[in-house]
Image (cartoon, rainbow, N blue to C red; front, side, top):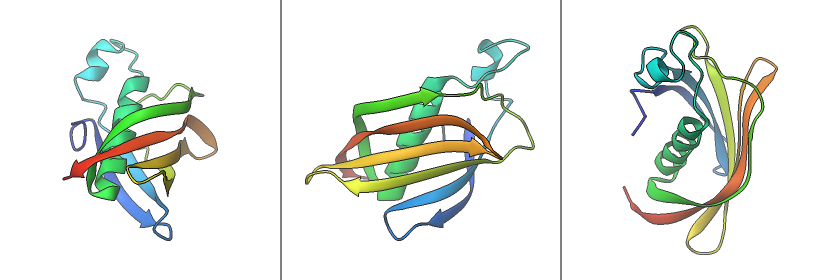
Length: 126
């Protein structure tokens, strides 16, 4: 789990039950940034995907598994900064009886860092 160690959710605004907009800050002192890269920290893409998975799971209050990644784009380098609150906007649509289709985007100001479109399978209640 990366929540509360790698990232923190600062605010959540629901969107008609079909998604949410969250404010997120990264912890620039997290050990992952010591190795990725020393003296020039960059947020690993896999950490953004894991963060999204955890946020979707929390939102649905169910454990989820990424089962299909239709689109994953890392559009700009995301450098962790103490003062920056990122925006994560996501929409969720039911996909069959055991899944949810998610579209998500991480931005700050007018810069888009990450775009995702894919499907998560619902595994169990948390």
